[in-house]
Image (cartoon, one colour):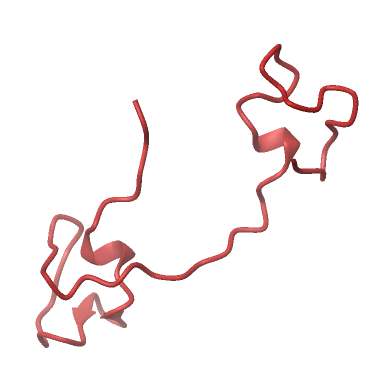
Length: 72
């Protein structure tokens, strides 16, 4: 099973302050989406070996180099 972000207003670039859709001009919530959905571009810098599900497991691609602060 793959885990993905949902195409909901929470992950949409059109969501502005006060949970308002800047395209439709209405207040929205977690369960809303529409055809104007645009995924927010966001980089997350907390991704590293320690947060990887494969860290210290037999599935790790680089077991000799895997360490906190490193990534594949």
